[in-house]
Length: 305
Image (cartoon, rainbow, N blue to C red; front, side, top):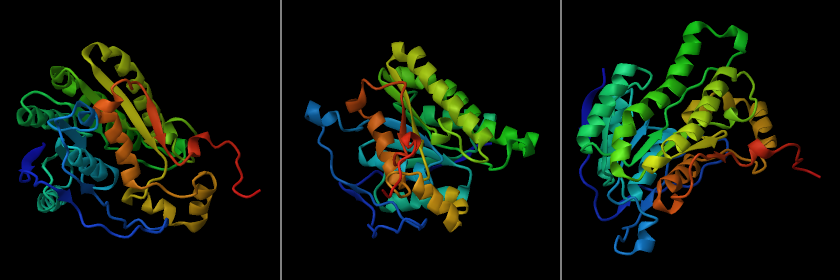
């Protein structure tokens, strides 16, 4: 069962994390650097680029892309609730955000479990008084193996974690999203939802399902002024892909099919997510935006003439 609500203190005038030098492309031990300036709220033009006064739920926000999203949204003025399966990791993250003046709450939740999803949304509804402006479905996992070798348990794990959680959380969040009169949903998909990747048939199917759910909900919920979009990354420097990219030959292959010739950073995904949450993107819905260095549109473009 989801348990334990954890909170941080209200933010200070300026939010900042210590900066660090940019890591080399092969490194996975990069830290997210966040500098947040005070956001003026008196000008309508400024408000288009602010999330001041908005509430947000980001699933899986203690590491990688999820952590970057949490910090990006907080920097833009949102009040954020996040969740993670690991209670110790969640508490450590909240303490770190507290020291940096980030206004973040958190609770323990495994989003692959239906009952825990319900408990999570009950907590969020209580915290935000029945209104949720932003839902970010970030949690996802992968099992790489030939399709014929998948066990029923492995198939179920990927479907429940990657797709069923998104579907159900959207269902549960709908009344709270509608109550705000202007809300947005952003799900983290993958380029695997568009193109074939080796030994990723089941993960690709779940991401393709997220893409189509995004398109359908964008139309179904437009009458409620709820925008629904997705962001589809390629390889991003996170712990989730560290092992597979530790093979230098494989890493070189990844670079060879990526026009920008490098891996992505978590903050390069979080900035796209944040834009889709801003009032400035109010006419964008039903879109899946690839954050992939050009990989998904690279037919044959040699890096050397």
